[in-house]
Image (cartoon, rainbow, N blue to C red; front, side):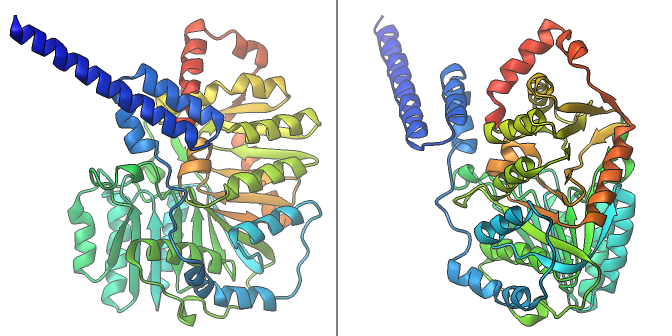
Amino acid sequence: MEIVIWSNIFSAAVYIVYFAVVLTTIFVVILDNRNPVKTMAWILVLFFLPVVGLVFYIFFGRSTRREHLISRRGYARLTRRPMAEYQAQMAFHTPTGKQTVMNFFNRVNGAFPFGGNKVTVYVDGTSMLTDLVKELYKARHHIHLEFYIFQDDAVGRLVRDVLIDKARQGVRVRVLHDDVGCWKVNRSFFEQMLCEGVEVLTFLKVRFPQFTGKVNYRNHRKIVIIDGKVGFIGGMNLAERYVKGVPWGVWRDTHVKLEGKAVYGIQTAFLTDWYAMDRTLFTSAEYFPKMDVRGNVVAQIVTSDPVGEWRDIMQGLMMAICSARHYFYIQSPYFLPDEEVKSALQTAALAGVDVRIMIPKRADTWIIHKGSLSYLSEMMDAGVKIYLYRRGFLHSKLMVSDDDFSTVGSTNMDFRSFEHNFEANAFFYDKDTALALKEIFLADQKKCMLLSPKVWKKRSAKNKVTESVVRLLSPLL
């Protein structure tokens, strides 16, 4: 009898302590003054998922916005040469209405727009990988490579072997990969590079319990810089599926190669991330070499991260959507927009702008795809056209507007990219690039089904309920 009493007392004490911790956590979430939608999502998780909800919050919920990756003085040193080149360049024409977007990125993000660039666009992994390997073999001074996923498969091993070859030739090779993105990669894969002279760093290692708050903040960037003169940026990782596709079709993605002074922006992004992990700041002129005019494209490299004061890329995209006069086309594998972006898209469509959103008909993540589908009805009600890509998985992050504005990068149209990830996008302010990306969008559109509002509303009640439930968690996905 006494054992039963003590057991009941112990159980009651555990419940009291647990609920005290949960209530304290909810109080902390409220005091953090986040987006009310995200705050309510966390409160629901903490209330209705006992224990699991608390563990989720410890790993994914804590804010790191007050942290700093690099001091202002260090960043000023890093951007001294790009700043001088930016100030010395001849004035270039920027389309009316897009000057505000460019100025916003310049003032808030420190992103310098440069003219005289050449852009090569890739719409499949094979062509991008082929050109990347060619450019890597041309390297004479340094190679900087940063990917969310660097897989130990045929593609990853090919690039690894090239990097080792260049390191043996005396080229300085630095590789930065995300810890969560490469969780399944055996340590020996990167250790082989280290043994051959390649410098390898892991971005925000997740080790319990010290770094549990970091698991939610991932480096989603996919960039390469070769000798400071050639840069790659976009949505493609280093993995075999980008070449071979998925069981249900191709893996459709978009990446670009940049030649010209805009590469300074990609270089700055890499060196900032390298400093954040290694505390070594590279600012010498050899990383920002003098460059001649290579083309006629005006380009701006913009980064965003969860530790800054502003949501740079998200806010810039809002401005671009609101300044569209004729059309705004979007490709994204996931569509979980925050309230601001959602309202901007609806407002543009209601004003008569031709807004089109293309997402995959079948995605690689069931729960995120269900959340994406929950937004489609209200988009179509405002006049937004929804296209579902049927040929395989659409992983492309491409946007184009009014034949004068476009962007390619790693940023998805979702809470995670806008709020939690370290992202990087190239923004272009010229007609030729916009028309090229527009043609890519329209070519992909032929491989899509246009969603009918009437048909969509007739989908099963089970799907509607599932989508609505998942949507409650969309700020946390």
